[in-house]
Amino acid sequence: MRIVLLGAPGCGKGTQAKLMAEKYRVPQISSGELLRQAVSEKTDLGKRVESIMASGELVSDDIATDAVTERLRSNESKRGFVLDGFPRTIPQAQQLDTRLGWMNRPLQLALYFSLDPAVVVKRALGRLECAKCGASYNRYFSPPAKRGICEHCGSKELVQRPDDHQHAVRARLDAYDRDTVPLITYFKAQHKLRTVEGEGDIQDIFKRICEIVDTEIRPLETKVIAIETGREYRSDAVTLISGGKVVRKDSRADNDKAVGQAKQRLSARDSKKAAEKKVAKKKVVKKKAAEKKVAKKKVVKKKAAEKKVAKKKVVKKKAAEKKVAKKKVVKKKAAKEKAVKTKVVVRKSATKKRTHKG
Figure (cartoon, rainbow, N blue to C red):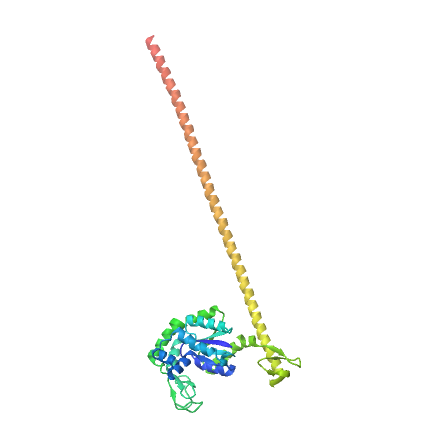
């Protein structure tokens, strides 16, 4: 399993990462822990990032990516890993995808812890760690049973991280909003994002995480192998050696049941995907039909409008021609009547002249 945990500082990623690492037997890889370890050991890397971390700012993408990649290449990470607090930026996520691609081990899931900002601040400021065994506590939400004493190792050294003071916490939250929140969209676009409600009892949150992991990842990693008896077992349920002997014996009934459950989960998920695909296809067909109908209406409306305009032009042209023709007729008639009147006047005048002479 290859998982990234996303969420604001103090949302509980570290606590849940430890529980996941223990249950699924994979390492928890925290860029913050790697860098803090480097600072405490005063390595070259630690000296470079000490002042940056104390101020609450984020280290450069190259430094963080190199530190994490080195750990991912180790033998203990071959079975999988839980990345806690890395990547923090889009460039880091892109570099991580590239390097895991080189290893042929791409990320499978990104779990986003959704939590109220006010609770996030209180969690960060109240965070405590055992200096001896690394156990995590919170003075507000999950204090140790005995004040100041670690429940795991009995140490009295419960300390606050150097970068968990008010100013640094505020700076980290501002940096988170600016640089890390866009990762939610980044992993959502890859269909790898799953949201976990981060408020509530630690074990309840862990149970929700396990349901997601067991549904999304573990069935996909289930392999069926045949041994001499012809029975089928899950590869993660038994370990085989030469000759078909079983090193770790699990009951066949349990294995058969596990295989059946895995198949049911896969079948249910496939059915769900098929149904979603069918609904999506119907929506696309319906949308195209609606768009085609609208386009057809527009064409019909446009043609009707053009026809109407053309008809108006014809009517207007005919009316104009008729008017011109009528004017010509009237003008011609008036000219004719004028000519007749002129002849009559001339005749009368000629008649009067003859009468006068006589």
